[in-house]
Length: 114
Image (tube, rainbow, N blue to C red):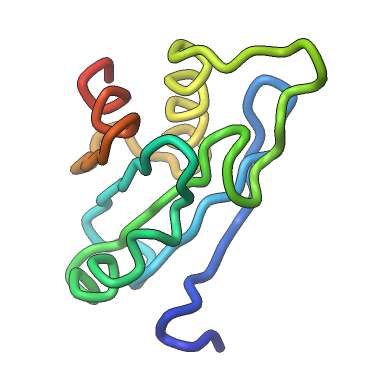
């Protein structure tokens, strides 16, 4: 069992990188995905995620190169299409086709592109 401010987390793969996603709330709740900004991490949404449970299941990935997720190698780049590929991989991992998506800063740009 985790403390209320310590979400469960799982790892999924996208483009050869292992990415970490944090989850609050019961499995099977209405999915909400929070997308963080540049130089941030998914756990930045803890306070709002906790407020949305138990009605929703909240997911907040650490984007590639951020938080606990994998980083591209030396000479690699971070491009928005790669972040969208990662988001598609998250949807696939979760087995969902729709979710409420909320983004902050760079995450808002990702949500718009989605």
